[in-house]
Image (cartoon, rainbow, N blue to C red; front, side, top):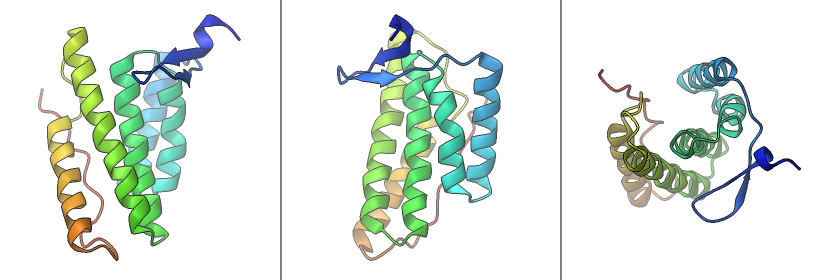
Length: 148
């Protein structure tokens, strides 16, 4: 194992890292977002993973993992598993908050994704699931882009 094969996360655990050129990460991200927007959440999850594993930038890793967990939440929705939706929405919310904190701490520019807007949309879905534990009334949130 080389020194570049793992990244230590905030929790102190080693995470997979498979360096991927920027252009390939961008292509994986666009393909994953496209699958999500078309409602193919399993495919979105799969397509986003190489982008997540392909960067060692903590803020980018947290953002991508948040999107992966968001897609996974709606894989559980398709399967009729409200507990899985909640668990993954909570994980997505935590990773998106981590991404925002990491960007600020590193002095990075704002994300291309409106993290506050997406977090608020996730909060609405969590409240909906708390009120309707047998299944959500709200569908998956849109992925709001930040205004430049």
